[in-house]
Amino acid sequence: MEKKLRSQQWFGKKGKDGFIYRAWMKNQGIPDYELQGKPVIGICNTWSELTPCNGHFRELAESVKKGIIEAGGFPVEFPVMSLGETLIKPTAMLYRNLVSMDVEESIRANPVDGVVLLCGCDKTTPALVMGACSVNIPTIVVSGGPMLTGKFKGRDIGTSDLWRFSEDVRTGIMSEEELNMAEAGMCRSKGHCAVMGTASSMASMVEALGLSLPGNAAIPAVDAARKVLAQLSGKRIVEMVREELTPSVILTRAAFENAIKVNAAIGGSTNFVIHLLAIAGRVELPLTIDDFDRLSKNIPLLANLQPSGNYFMEDLYYAGGIPAVMKELSNELQLDCLTANGKTVRQNIEKATVYNRDIISTMQEPFNQLAGFIVLHGNLCEGGGVMKPSAADPKLMQHTGKAVVFENIEDYKARIDDPHLEVDENSVLVLKNVGPKGYPGMPEVGNMGLPKKLLEKGVKDMVRISDGRMSGTGFGTVVLQISPEAAVNGTLALVQNGDLIQLDAKGRQLNLLVNEMELEKRKAALPAPFNPFNRGYAKLFVSHVEQAHLGADFDFLKGKSGSDVLRDSH
Ligand code: FES
Ligand code: MG
Image (cartoon, rainbow, N blue to C red; front, side, top):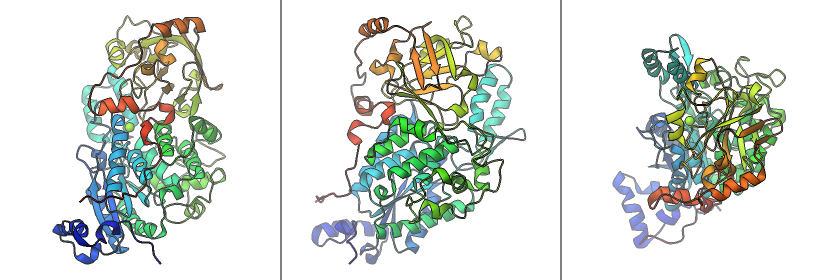
């Protein structure tokens, strides 16, 4: 006998409660039979005109609905808070955990049997996946897809060029007028950033984890195939409900390991580390930051995509997409993992083909032997610090230099272009108080721009360290996500101008070369960490956010609440 659907705890009720649950739904023109035992599928929509990357999601939801109806389900679309990277101050990351709570409680509280997550811009993916995992009803992700490749003066551009353009304007290589032209040509269509930034890394992550249909990550937002994928996902989620295929079945240790390796092979974002750790926390899987280094160590860079390479997501799609990358990587992957379509990774990649070797290389001749992440420890980052070697200058990976310290982002902005700033190309730029609690919310400022006077000398890269993050589109020899952060009086808080800092990427060490006694003295002089907010979400955030090496989730959100809600509302 088929198990009673969760939604029937609402719509299948008799008497007053059942009346209330059904009658108001019927004001939307719903015939009675729709509520009599069809799988009810929630479409969790992050559409918002303030999240331009997700601006096409109402249209996408219509395709999902077609699939749900076709398979005999009943679709209900609902909104959750949406996070756009470009507009939200002080940083979208401040709200990732809030959205995850919105998603979790919206699903738990409502009569849905399965859920389709419409995700696009960076934080919308991890937030929705985190929330859905904590409920653990059948879930499938449909990503919004990348924008078409940007164009400027006849050449291809994407978000990663933004960092180059802004340095070029500062040094006068590029005019304001040219910058305006680039601005008009960067974002040519619906969709999220067209490079392998965080949004594309997240879309690839869900595909590698098995939470989406194969091919989900790379199809451009405006390609007709995106709508087809959305419709097929709608159709599939109804079957997943019947099969009781929940995230906890899909998200095994092996699935996480596959995702880490795929992220390395595509040159994915450093933000992947923090988000995957947070997702692992929700499914109670003991993943550690060191797993990222260990598992990605022998994975070469197979995808030639900006910021680590040259091409764009559109090119990746034409070259075969993530299934083709995974096929190339198949000796490294655990192929028996079950995925959302009910098939294994092995089955999903069986027919995948690489159509362009300039974009997806072989394992034998990769674009770069360096990929993945280096996870550093040492007295400056006992919890961990993250580097992306494929985006760094190899000459700086073993480097000792004098610290030039900025106490916070305002201090950095005020002094970085000061001609009297004591800095040279061997200095190590140190930015404090941009961590989870310190900012709060860990903004993407870790790849801080270089001092103007050094840019003018032609310096292109320097060692930079901070407790912040970097945009997935960024690059440079930057150590990010230093944990513990300065705001909790981690060693980072103790660094002073002129101290020697030693980066030994090979030995996985980042150390402040100051003797123990002196460090103890400096530590004793620091005020105790405190929460400067006396109300609202920021107070909650600073009180409960965990350190970066644990995923920066709230301490009270680990694990699941499940989908049972036993009390009725009236
Ligand atoms: Fe939305 Fe880049 S700004 S994905
Ligand atoms: Mg970003």
